[in-house]
Image (cartoon, rainbow, N blue to C red; front, side, top):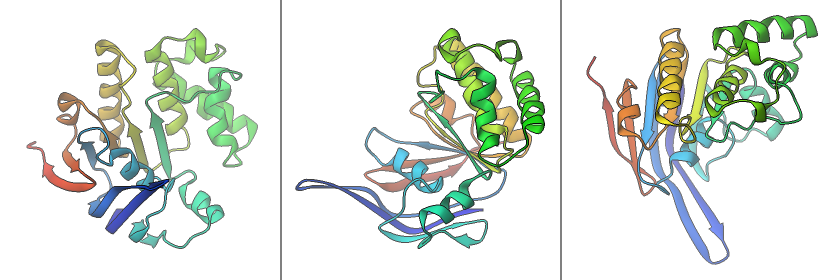
Length: 226
């Protein structure tokens, strides 16, 4: 489903060059739950951005569902990404001017879904994630755990094949973090492919596979025992 071949990425800031990814070879099959780990600055978020078509490699190839993404312009990358890849961020990235319902509906509006269908699918997803009673609230009126549930609802409502999560429990306390981890396990069990960046060994252990980065290279790629 997702395949990186000899991918490199270097960032330049003045005279400083930082090699974020250094010859990455990685295949992720449909239905996998992969945890990406490693120290700060090792390339985890860059890898996630690459998989989500938010960044492009300096060299190497990226294939998604058998289609090569290299060389596509931004409009075609958006079309390839839209509705196929969902994102969950550590900082939730909800829009304060919109209600919970409007935040989630926005993901469907970009896909051209009718207003009636947007309302139906949003209501069903908020109910599934246990925040339907907060549909008319603003993000600032919610707890951190509720905000993350809304962010997950927004990511899932287009029914993406792949969910990319960047430290999804990073801003949550232990109890709320475990709630989110249970949700991710459920979502994966229902068939969604998940790639999650995490600093937590305990959370990484809940995935089916761990990919560990160091200095932009994969140093561990291991399946977990069932």
